[in-house]
Image (tube, rainbow, N blue to C red):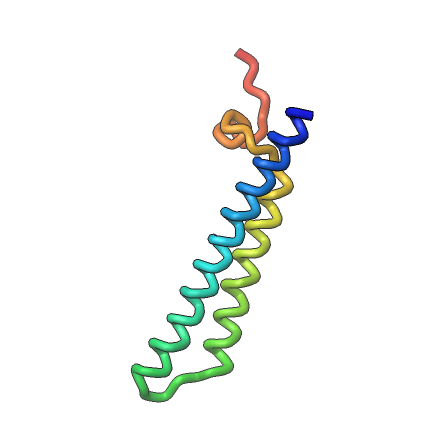
Length: 85
């Protein structure tokens, strides 16, 4: 039962961290649009929208890749390769 509680706590912490990161990315994207609109001039809105969608896609691909990997620091340092010594 203790392992299950520890796992649930770990999952809740990851979920909170992921939600915070997603909120940060969303805020940065909104700020980008607001600053672009306030600067005036000729804004290519289609290009800006495509740029923002590509940023979001890269972010979510990174999140998906990170969530499918192990959380071990050793695995991250050696890029999940074995190093026989």
